[in-house]
Length: 290
View 1 (cartoon, one colour):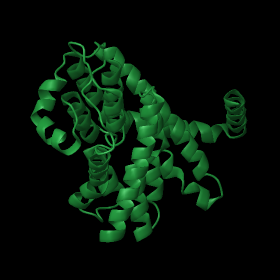
View 2 (cartoon, rainbow, N blue to C red):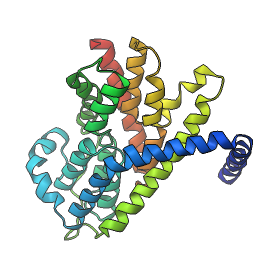
View 3 (cartoon, one colour):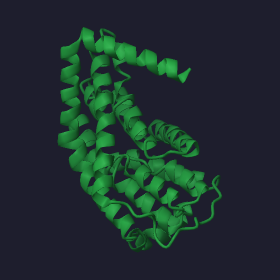
View 4 (cartoon, rainbow, N blue to C red):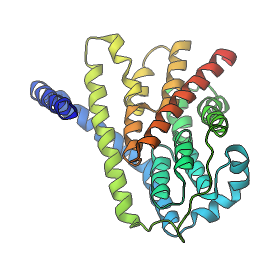
């Protein structure tokens, strides 16, 4: 069944490409510009640095500084603390990449890796303040309000889920499995760029359809181009809420990027459930306080 579905999707893509080659070319150029000017500059130093720290086992040295706080809030191990730190600082999908690598190395147990996946994949601080706050919202919300809306839901999600995940420390080797820092960084960026370009092409095609209601699902597909499209609408309460909720959800493109580094189905399931929890928590907060 899967083979037939993928075959049908491939045929549909070919037909669309042949019927509107100029539109596909323009959308591909938009996706490539998005990668070259925004995605790669933002993620390259984060992925390179985290790869180097994992290779040299420096992640424990860094995580020890914040491990008491993270252990108190989430009950994570020292390797888990490194995943929490990168998940809140580096943006999609660096946390998933690090969790997947540490899990494969035996530094994280299955339960802890699943727990971390449920709340550690978030947009970076720079994206939240500069892109969402300044470009999309036009400074309607101040930075503290944006911080609370974007990062309080995953923190609350992690605290709540801590009571449902019962894990023990992994059985790490002397250090995590060694990686070739340069090659691994290059392959990760190529993989991420592939998904960004593909989903940007899909969103551009949907936006071109004479169906206004259908076009509003774009932010659920690719977060960067989708939020830009959504910000073109008047800044009503519904638009502001939609921008915040879509940012917390992350979009299908970010999900696909994270899934490419999380091979085990249980980790993918935790990601989906965690994102749904965070969206629900944010919606509750907006209803109560906005």
